Image (cartoon, rainbow, N blue to C red):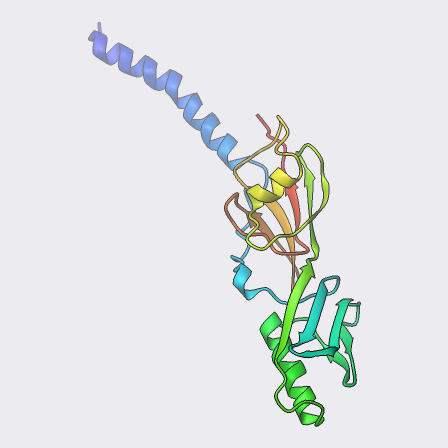
Length: 196
């Protein structure tokens, strides 16, 4: 007869082994487990995009300003200098471009131009949240804050990470976003349903 410790050890191994297999299977079967993490986004690198509402003003020169939403072609109309490409530029780059154009066209020799984003492009949150839809982007918004804007996770939600479609200069990128990662305007975030 085997000693008691050997009998218990064998029994524990037989009982524990299926749990190890099951745990590994569940980890591998988690929704979106095959997704790669989306490249990190730095809110400080924000660039103007189609749909943003911006204000461009020149200090001390009230006639040189505009409050407009960036149209599909990405260019905005500015008094006297005409169309200026705004899409893809930071607010600083756009202010420098307008100031340089005013100087080059001999309209204002030392223009101090400021650019503000008044309304950002929205983000979309779908899937296992209380109220899916489009929500206003705010600088510094994380995935968790985006979910909060959508009313929070539903009781079936998988909360460790989410699926995201992000628009980049080369086209749409698909990947995984985690709760503390920053979201980017135009992101479409899908919260998965738990499988167990």
